[in-house]
Length: 215
Image (cartoon, rainbow, N blue to C red):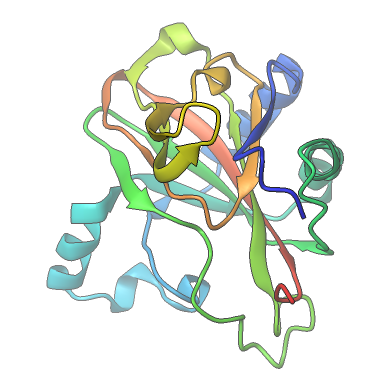
């Protein structure tokens, strides 16, 4: 495992036609408030209290749709495999969770977080998830960059040192994701955020790929 690369990108890699198909399909589905936490798929907005919803929106405010259609995975998974190899991570993974189609309107955002959880999934009724952890996170930009402002993907490298300069790297804006169809792959333990959208609407697709815990 090589961690020299904190993320890997394919700029404008997904054809606009595919981006538009995903957006059209995602927009046709019923959205729900994005929530956070371990095993969030077992929760529903309807059983959250008003206070719980309010607390969630302090960290994350966006609208999402869950998608799990094979044609979407077929388009994205080759890039995940390529990034895993080209970046030098070589993580063992064998399954991708449901895709999260996300809409960020003006004022919506996602604060600092990492996608990995403190322990593996405990889902004995689902062999695809049980005992596995999130290893690779993927974000795909579905929107033309001139259609919105803000909504920047940023990585927190403040605890990482550039060994050539011996200086901490700080917060890095991932400008490579701005062009429509761009794909960013990074280890799920890397901290990141999406800054508030200030104009327009930003649409993205997020996928997490799983494998057995690191040894």
